Image (cartoon, rainbow, N blue to C red; front, side, top):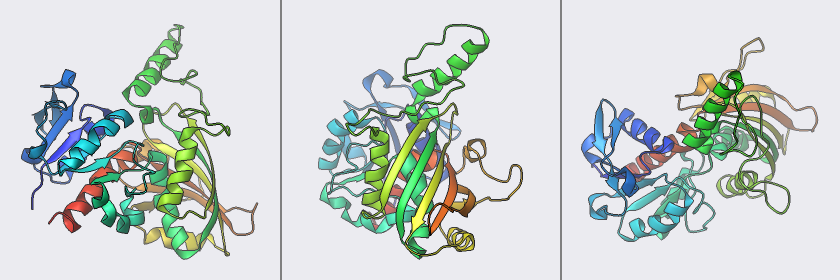
Length: 337
């Protein structure tokens, strides 16, 4: 069965990545409808070696599609996703707006595929935060063999997580730095070139940022509400690829060999962990790839039953566009036939 698919926000970083992945995975061009704001109407976007014209969100005929992939920000999703859903179109939303709605399944296919069965409550499915997605792909196989009690994670998140403006700011500031020019901060609160910023999204009353809160809440909804969780989210001068240093405390004794075995059989996980120079994955190696990469697996000697791991993934793919397309594929295979 072929289905027609709309991509709302098709001209953005994630929207373009969605188009690329849909093409890679064999979806026919004739079934793809790029959608964006009226100012992008008529613009061409790439689809493999072809191009497709962008249609206006305000004018789009909802009867033309069965599924819509949203990646245009929370405000657009808030206003438009319910309209698409009411018209009978299943929405897979990449924004944060619907993630904590109890009637909207929040899905990582490798982690909680079974929750997708509830999508008809609102005809909306939520995609998790990019940093949560890669973290839980790595934690799920461990949680399956030995219940996780506590997670402490520090993220090192690339500027592409802040959109094209974030990538442009890093590029422009880096260029200006070597030209002894003025480095303006527009997208970020401090200079991002040759710097790190321990602040992503707005601050909450308890001193955590909204990004850190999202990771905690989404981990509880997707994996286990009983896991104690704390995060520190940091923006770093990397264009693509989020990295995470993760300390995990388990209920029972666990070994590095146990972890290796769990990762080996887990979908979406690749372990590259050699105790030598370069024997680990960095964002450069993960960019453009689908898997979540795990390195530096070792015992956390600060707790009785602990492991420390390093997790890296392409945030535009597994953290956003790929996860969305994987949900689409599950939906098509199991629910839309």
